[in-house]
Amino acid sequence: MNPTVAFRQPAHLILHEAAHHIRIQKDDMMCCMGGQHCKHWAKTLFGMYKKLNVPLPFGTQFETFAEIAGIPLCTFIGAVRGD
Ligand SMILES: [Zn+2]
Ligand SMILES: [Zn+2]
Image (cartoon, rainbow, N blue to C red; front, side, top):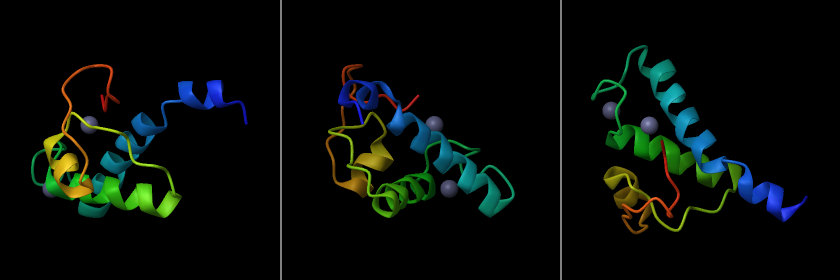
């Protein structure tokens, strides 16, 4: 695999969105915060990284995910953006 191409693939973004979809399917609704980044979403996302063996991002702008994944909370765009 070409590392440059892999770097450009928004794997984190895909997992982020997938976690939203899983929450919606599981709860048959938009989870506890109306599809926002609640702890359930963060837990689901963290589980996906583990399950798919994807390295965690260096930081996240989402507080719930930072807490659950144990990674730094970053607010600058250079960090992996979730949205
Ligand atoms: Zn929730
Ligand atoms: Zn989101």
